[in-house]
Length: 622
Ligand code: ADP
Image (tube, rainbow, N blue to C red; front, side):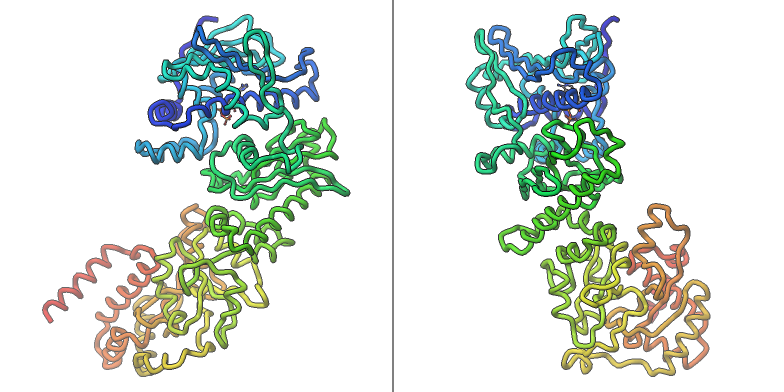
């Protein structure tokens, strides 16, 4: 087959451009990336060979070799892992398959500093080779196949693929080093990079020096070593390797479970939020090993989705080596490991949350919204998770626990009050909150989409119900007002006038509202919309409508503030009689105003504008 010329996928082109032009000050990490890929390739073949021993063709000692050639100015990284065939080369080294990547790359701004930070989180993997190489050649033969292939690119938009008849199993990646990067053929340099970033790699990394080739890493799986012999740097580098991450882990947990079920866990909680944490597949990412043989990183049974931020490895003593994907489903050993892992992770979170130096807020900002999914998904752990939850509230800027909230509830306050919306600042200004703020009743400000779901699912915390302030039932009458608050309260319109106004507004608005009521909660706003008890909250409705899960709009209750000057005057005018046109305009405008306060549009923007102009005109005429 003749040589084929192909273009990189647009996103790869963009990535390469950034890799080559802005990039990191420490270019040496290219070696870590290539060794990491080589090690993954060996792991994958070792696992495949459990069921298909022929794939090994007698060569079962896995190794990674570094061959520097000062005369040619090249460095070659060779592994005898699973290898890549023609299609793998095109698909894996020409595109970025990871979900969400295109969107991620579209956030690149062209501003070098920001881009490097983003890329740092994302990792450039194989493409980092172009930081030091002006040309990269991959010669590879896939295990079990007879034809080898050669992939060549200068990283400028195109690559070629052609047959390579004498390719060995695995992959040999040759970097033609740029003039300024020739140091990467020097033995001491390569040794120090491998020691620093790749010592934890479980298979030998051998360096060719003259006629000898010797391993320059420890070549034992990090998690099997005693804790006392592992440095923080080594833990961190292993995290970078398993998690494909580049930040500092927020927490590292290394332990051996002994007893009925034996396994070793080396778990990490990342220090920052991975860009795809809210991908709908909600996949967990722990790698499963059985007696040091890699099995899969796609084992849903290992951890519940609400802990999908955890990275690392679990190495089981009890599962059989030839465990298949099907066997992993409903496997009792795995179920026990899962229970152990959940307990361990939640225990660690609790410990860190109680430690003033634990920096729990960092974790919460990154993963709180994920952990909260557990409140309604993990019934058994609900209490533990609720204790870990942190909230913003009307009481201040800090994060508050439910225990703190309950401890400072007001006399006569029955429930834990909540309000849901998209944004903290908008929520803080919601008219729904006015009465609560006036009475000093604290309200939880909930802005994660998940909040809508768990608040309705959790019956109680410490015997206190969760109750939305937006639901009509929210009752402030029973809460004792702070001293002097009543005196400051503006005068209410006479009750009979309000009754007349309400009747007139109901007539004018017809089926556009479920009801019109006099409000307990409003202090400074004239009107607000509330959901009837038992109706879906307005924020949830908006979320579902955005996902086309509900059609049309629910009608709501309009509350009017009998203490507001506008309402008082309108009530007096209506009671005096002869104002039906005015009431019609005013009622429609008040309803639209209430909608706008909820972040909605007026139902009929043209009619809204006309009415508003009419009333403004009258105002000018005085
Ligand atoms: P990542 O490793 O994060 O998936 P890379 O860009 O580093 O991304 O590599 C892309 C893919 O190319 C890998 O997922 C793997 O399938 C394949 N690959 C890379 N290096 C090798 C190798 N040495 N042997 C076999 N396959 C490889």
